[in-house]
Length: 401
Image 1 (spheres, rainbow, N blue to C red):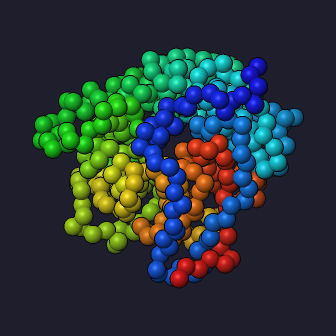
Image 2: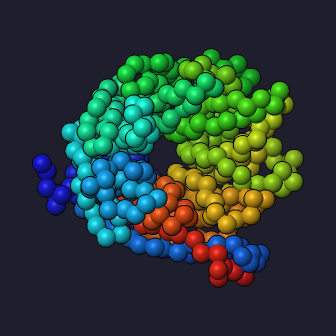
C-alpha cells in the first residue's frame, strides 16, 4: 500500500489540469457585498478546515462505512474524498482516515446510493481510466469499464421508480447501466450534429475543442400538459442544454455559451424576470428552476423551458450548488453558491450577491449536507491546495449594509 506521505507527489487529475490551463497565480479577491440591507438572513461561517496529504479531486457525503469504523453521531454524514492516487479518504473535524484503495486511476466522480437494493448505501467511484467501481460497506462488489475517463455521474429515476447509473465521459459519451447490466449509450456530439441548421446557426464560434461531458443533472419538470416529467439534462462542448430520457434526446435548447455546471432549486421569483433578456424560449411550463453556470461567467436560469440571464460574473463558473437553511421561510428563494476561476465562494439570493467567502485557493468541488448531525445543512469545499473546509450558516447576526 502506498504511503500517504507520498500521495502529494502524484500527477494532477484531469479536472485540476483543466483549471490550471487558464489559471494565474491566486489573488486575494475583495468581497463585494450587496448595498441592499438584508436583516435576518444567515451569515456563513467556517466551522473547521483540514489540510490533506493528497489532492482533492471530488467529494461525496453519506454513510458508507461500517458502524464499527464510523465515529459519527446519529444523523451525521461521512465526508468521502476522492484522490489522485485512486484512494478514498474519510475525514472529519478530528482526523483523516484511510478507507479504500480502488487500485485504479485518479478518482474523478463519486455517488452514494443503494444500487444493489440490499438496504444500505453503496459507494460508486469513477476514475480517469474509465473504471467504475461499486463498494458496499467497504467491499468491492462490482466493476465495469467505459471507453474514456469518467467526468460526471448521476442517478436517474424513471417514472416507474426504477433507476439508472448515468456516466458522462471525456469523449462526450453518456452511458447508463445498473449494478448488473447495461441500459443505453449515447454520443452527445452526434445529437448536436443532427440538430436543424437554423438552431445551430451562429453557435459554431461558441463550440469548445474538448468533447467531454461538462455536466449532467437529473430533474423533474412539468410538460405542456402540466404532467411531471423526469429528464436527464446534459451539456457537452456545444452551447446547448440537452433533455434526455432513456438514452433518447427529446429536446435541445441553445445557450449563449458552453455550460460547465448545473443545479436545481428555487432561485428567482417570476416577477423578477425582464422579458428583454430572454435568450431562448419554448411555449411550455416547468415547476423546477435550473441554474446554468457558463464559460462566459454568466449564470443563466432555465424555467418553463426558457433560458434567461440571472446574474453575471467576470470569470468562468465551474460549480453551482443550491443551499437552503432549514429555518428559511418557505416563500423565500434558495441561496446559490458559485465557484469558478477565482479564490472565492460567491453566495447569491434573488440574483443578488449577499456574501463573498474568500478562500486560500480555487475551489474544485463543493457538496451540501448535514455533516455534523445537528439537523442543519452545511457545505463542504475541496480546494486545489489540498484543503477541505466545512461552512455552516448563522441567522442570528447577519446584516449587510
